[in-house]
Image 1 (cartoon, rainbow, N blue to C red):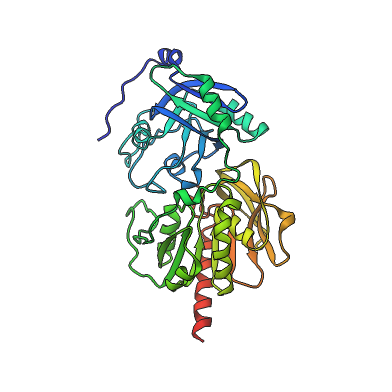
Image 2 (image 1 turned 135 degrees about the vertical axis):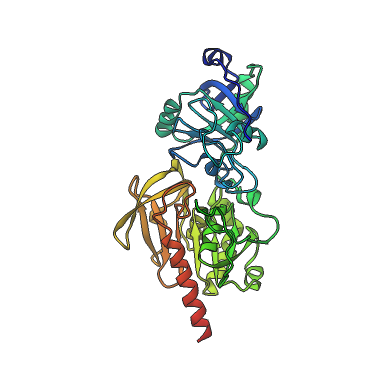
Length: 398
């Protein structure tokens, strides 16, 4: 049962200013604090998705970031226990335009404000999110500090210093922080269906080992849809330990931070797995680390891609997919070795959205085919990985 929120006079709210956002250039945005009372510093980015705020906030790829939602109606469907993309919330904070309304959805178990408090996420509402989005678009994603206090009193100099002193995401390995500490086997839950909710997969014909750099649960659900048993291992697990699990294929997960920093320990492992002719599929950070393994380089983007409406051209099939994206780093096209083929590109800025190794069953994409939230145009990529694993298993038997 959701407790009814007290209605607060909006004129009174506008005078209180219990929340503040301070950017590294000393720009100050004032609003109303929501969620957890406290202070958090991170990179301020924006997400253009119209739906799926719970899945976005609970995506480990947002570790170290403060999310500015461009869609004004955030919180109107409440929150539930099923739409978490990870067990722990790593997002630093959220920024909203409009006050959170009472939830109206049959699945809602709590309002967003209560959920944010529980997960210790600092939030602020009543901001001109369009102005902030324009700033990010023109100047790039800035460092920022968000703070909420019921007193409405803030030490702006202290918040500014916190912002300036934070080193940012470049050269920062966050995968180690968000990755599982113990190996585990996925419960087998499939993707959610309106008629049945989550049901368990009873058939497990292929064994996938997923290297966890910050994996989303919906990726694991899709593997269950395709009858896979999935063992999730820490991002620092070596190739020898992975091969002991006798996988049919290796999955390189999404995750936060700078791929070059994570690559310092990840590249050696992936090189060994490629030598063993293992089918490999990477998403997001996994895509970037695979590129680094194969000899390419990555760089920090000005503002990144974050939303559920990004058009990507499939260069193999010559068609367009609408995709869900969340990344602030990209592969440098000029650094690609000749044995890598570009399979997808962004129609927003032509950045590389997919690659494959020409002579081995190894491929990856920058975007999120598992969506949650977002379109499902690219689910076929899971099937391609399944096909590669089946071919490889057949080859080994013959």
